[in-house]
Length: 365
Image (cartoon, rainbow, N blue to C red; front, top):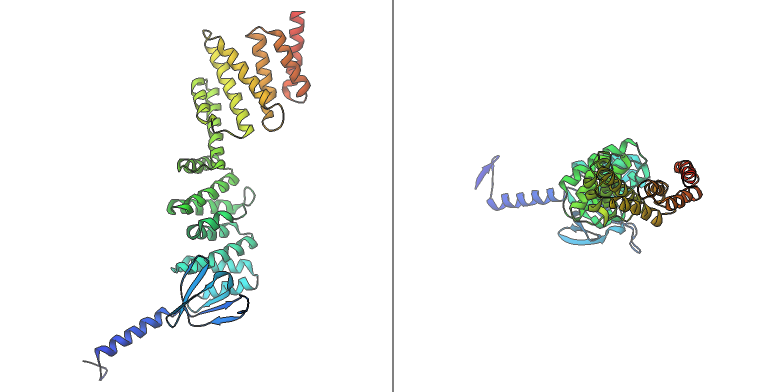
């Protein structure tokens, strides 16, 4: 027995008082749930303890009795210890989207309740989308990606146009998340970051993200396309620096993975330029001229029109020049110049082809 304030209290009473105090703290967040389910509309639960949200269900206890309801049935909730959250719910109910976003964001930043983050993040995401606040939508979406990657992949925030200031903020948020989130959520975050960096037109950052995605072993077409673009840019630089073998090796690295017609056409053009450069640099390998001309012709044959055909006039022009000047096939060259004139009359190479064709005729008549 111990004397406290002039009275005596048994150890049992002290323990009982402590347990009651702990229980009161556990239930300090008084919660009101209004079920919108059929037949139970307007049903309210007071003085409950939320335990978790799992598989589309919200689990809570009333006087120690655990119950659960579908999250889809929950119309609103109020938490005694979360005034910002309560304000957000009220604003959301009244479609005051920007105010709801601000209060949800404040709650998300301060709370340590995982279930509360899981509950408010979809609502914050929805409000941010409606308020056209991309950076806030990304903040909520990152939380969703951590708890439910499948949902996050199925519903990504709408990307704003280039130069929107919120893109820079979002890129920072997503990069931080990518550095800290693992598993499927990590992959989802990288995929959205790739889209954001593309909208920002930050080539270096875009290539870095694509590299991370590709190196993770994920066969993501968008990331692979970015990597291929980077590879083709490297090959173009190597050709301009007369590093022809290096350029051919770079093209071969990505050749089997190129699916885009535009990228395939560009790769063929660069291969032709590298072979042509090698032939000019090494007279001991005359067959390289044939290989270069054939590569250019393959580009035209596969992409005479439509996507990828932008490179065809240039490829035909180079093939014709090689046939005329290196392989001494004036008739073949004349045919190719004629194709440029008739099929690509608006291309810059058309005028050059007319002049070259006229010169061929004057030389061989």
